[in-house]
Image (cartoon, rainbow, N blue to C red; front, side, top):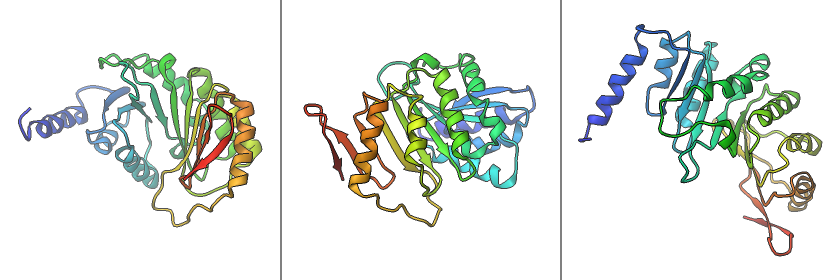
Length: 249
């Protein structure tokens, strides 16, 4: 495309999607489209799958906007390719923006919806998904989180990489994490991140011995675990030769 043609193409597609020529129940689209405008224009929309290429700020922005306004949201999730294979192997979900009853059934909605994605050369197949990102909020108590984790594991049975994005600093007890990880025994990498940079609180430094003690319990549940990154940016890694763990800053 010549310079400017891509923008014209996106603008035209936005206009088509926002017209009332058809009733959309499920939509898969690129993150470059105007997600906010599409959601506002299509109140009948139930599922919205967004293809991303790393980063979710363009997705989080409208979700935060509509949550504040109390606007009905379709089930929004992201699909990303993390390997050279022609399949979307990384799924992102956003329970921070949905009520408990909707979170309890999102796995069914998501699994059924992925079977309808016929508009891409890439495959959207639950059996091919190996990485899961879950965006959690203040209102998501651990019982809800456990339910979501268990339900997602029943649909996506090949998860080896789990990312937990936290809205703000809060403690997850070791017992709660142990229960959550029990749904993903084949896990090899576990990461904790922060998604809401507007929060004023900061992460407290967790002593190195506490991190290593926690990881040693987690590896008993997930024997293939080789790396854990905490929300303060420190990563604990397993030495493949000795099975010892060390903290990498």
